[in-house]
Image 1: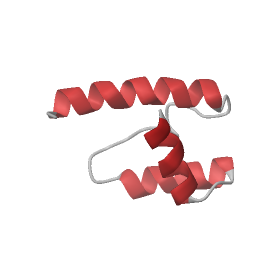
Image 2: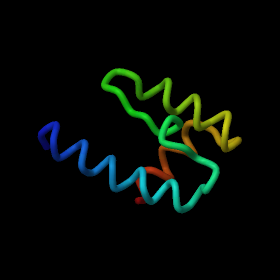
Image 3: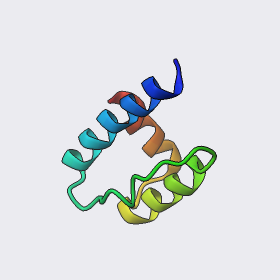
Length: 61
């Protein structure tokens, strides 16, 4: 999968997450290369879920 495909897939997943968790903003879901753990940390605090729970949610999309 190239970078363009990965970004497209993330944009789709981001939309689904925003539908599922209405309190999430674009800033919460901002994904920069090398900053995955930082993003998961923001989501962990905002949603009250563990990083493992968040990974499962994202993988299930």
